[in-house]
Length: 409
Image (tube, rainbow, N blue to C red; front, side):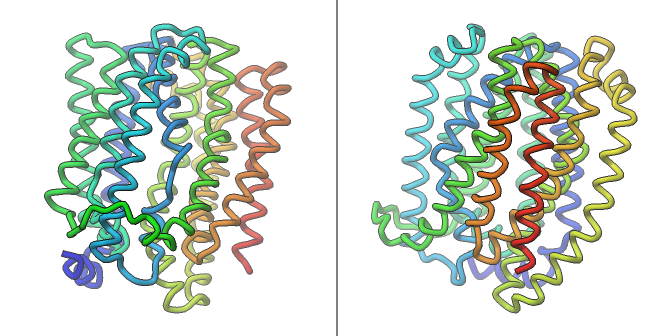
């Protein structure tokens, strides 16, 4: 099984065209799902779903092992014993996270004084267990740069997500439809990983045997922990102090900016990470030249897209969501700034991790977080959601500069 993926990756399945297919299908399907759901549900219901989803993001980031990235970056392929240890560690993580989220559903809902969010958070508790039960063979597919199979895997799951969500919305299930669509998505991914991507493994709890993977992953974990606070702090503050309706407007503005500006580079990062790693192991100089080539092409394109979205923000909102979402347009205009920086970071992060220096990613994230913690309360108090978007841009700029300087060494 492993040899097949390596052989395929060396022939035709690692071509970037498969990443483009995945980008168009997956991002397009999920964007359509989000826009249709927002149009049907309105700001308040989207705000409720947002509370459940960022609660899920919080508990998952708290124990991100970074094992998948470590397996991709590792110089040699893991054996069946190591694969078994990885699987049991991830399974235990999934069980713990599901239990934690289920127990925290009511306290989280009470904290935000949004009591309708508790059932949604409880439903979302299923997702960590599904995500952490996949066969480690999927990580080997990523390592082998087999983007054809990854594209099919992601596209099929996104289509199931969209279909289930739209069906349930049609049947008037309300906000929970989005979460049940996510559960269907993760269930299909789990099934595919064991039927199509599976690699032989011997389940065991000898986690000391994968010490090198865990050691690399500790920087991923620390970065994820900081990114957790960084990515969720704005949502927590707005949901807490501005209420579910304003949170829904802010979330939609951020989501549109992310879809248009950032999601493309993020998907590209999935392709770049194993390729950066493969080139680095062959020749560090070649990896650096490849990185420069990507940056010189990507940054101008993303900057033009961001400017166009800022100029056409009002029209995008009206056409995509309707007049009831028009209040999100001013936030969208400002949100393109941090999303542009996020697009640049989406390339810097896989490069630094691929060359074995994930520490710099953690340090850059810490810089972002410190600036955000200092600036966000003041800007939120005086300028509301627009101030929060400005704070994100203010925090992202020095982080981009820091990582770019480190990438040149």
